[in-house]
Image 1 (cartoon, rainbow over the protein chains, first blue to last red):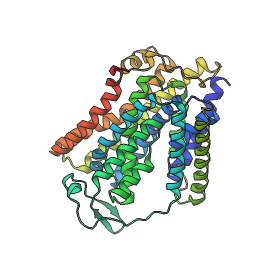
Image 2: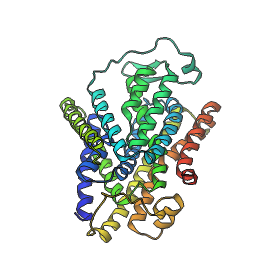
Image 3: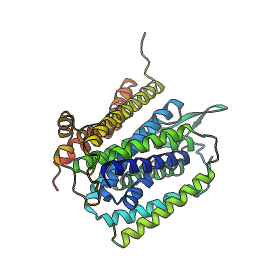
Image 4: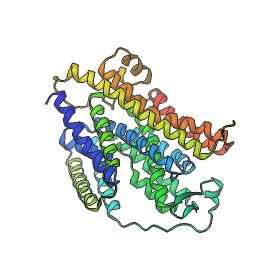
Length: 278
Length: 129
């Protein structure tokens, strides 16, 4: 395969990943690394470097659209970014110390877990009715627009949310993914932040988190321009198209199919890692 | 006319920074990609074995110097650097926004985040090991 063919095929694969990730809300980054390593036989370190770059592109693009709507909470995001960026540095540091097979095994487990999280029914409405001391001290309480006007909310569980965010950052730095699923878990479940605020604020944070590890990857020579170019442009184009088309369409089946693909890729990564064939 | 620094105002500027950064980065990457494909399109593609990038494609100063020669790979790397810099600029701007709101606590938090990001881009290479 020459560079032209390789670039074209990787662009198409990344476009589809970005499109499906955007349509299903599961994020495209999580399937990129398995796609590149399994289908294109790319070394996992190059794949992670390229994936990180595309995560920054899609997160920044989506965040730009969300902040205007008034859902994302910039203070919650900024405070938790202390945890995610330090975690991301640690993850990127670890990525150089552990073997490719170990990374593949962790990746496989995270893929299967993300698919499981996506399949689980959500329980909205489990919100705090009393202000929490720490959440109030940190000025995290806010409000968001609903059809019935602004609705205010209280934020709690700051220590556990902060801890989970550190883990989300470390996974992001180790695997080159946005780990939006863990971020939403921390905000939605631990900190009792309304779902819409969690998802948009999480999106806002993903780019900053990924930038913290991308610097390390770049310095270490894990970001190859020839590979990152079609991946970044493909994912970005796919997610832009995905955000524009069929917002009202039935995405349930699409989510189901995409979750199945994620599980299959997870099992494949797990197998390759355990068999040492990566 | 006095400029009112509200959360909403800050967030709108943040949105503009993010959008402009992504568009600029993608444009530079695309132009670099075209040059790269014209020159190297028929070379064999092989990413099976990890070599690591040469030193001029690693550090910030090296990438900028290399990109100015106009080579495709250097330009792509410059575009990727712009992309990585976009969230950094966003965080730096947030410090200005919080300072204008006289929110010292969040100026401090945001400064910590900015330091971590700058360390990743500029400081990591000086770490031993």
